Image: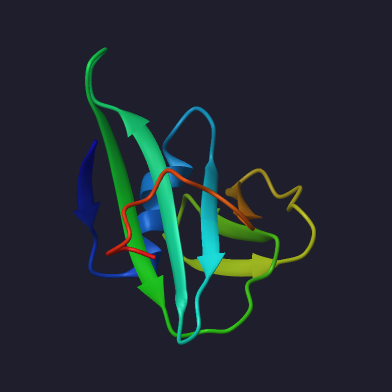
Amino acid sequence: MKYIKVEKFEDLIRLAATSISPVLFYIERESDILCFSIAPLSLAETILWYATLEEKKLQEYALFNALDGSISFSDIPSTDAKSRNVKLIKIVQEDLLPENLI
């Protein structure tokens, strides 16, 4: 697996909003939140895109407005045709990530 850290959480949301399955996973750590998305690069390789956040709690959805590029957050999905809902899923246990990321 290859790892790519993006500069801003918003970049990760924009990346997820363009995918077929707009989902981001996150793990709450002691000092921040690690957010990530997994994307196949080829049949033999996978990329884990990630960013860190200083916030302590995330809402359930990131709403990406495709017309103006703005991002907002909500606990309910948007029905606005301009918005793309990105589901934020909290991970409570995993064995996928290397120790240096957790």
